Length: 208
Image (cartoon, helix red, strand yellow):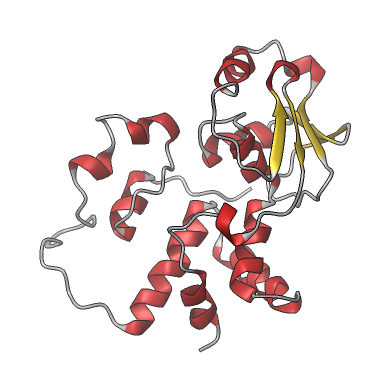
């Protein structure tokens, strides 16, 4: 399974926006973006004027890297979003939000999408009672996601059960922290998805 293995803080610095890729560290004084927000590389103090194409590409990269999706996979998501009724950009974000690794993150089982991806890949979760280890698995309304009974005694899930009680959970999912389970109540609408993304620029990038 291909994945990004370089320092993720470089991504935030390159995009000029904190993407919260390292969980709780992003809220601490150790956050690399807070200490040095300039883009990585030499001679980055002098910012050049960004072209329209550059803005579109950077927005596409921002969304893609936030959800840890590879280029070809992201393009496939866009093509599927085009085929659905409604706004293509919103459809794209909605499909990314409904990925199993993101749903696990949104429910509070993990501190970041990267951690959620790892936990799913190691087979800790079941969807509707069936063990699932595919981070890109597309969840649907009504799906029940739970930590498999044989894994619930692990320290990481004991900690998650406590933090989930006070976590900010999106309205389109529900959780039962004590039972380490959650359900997808509905598909997220635009107001319930990340406001920092400009999905129209992504659409324009692929529509050139």
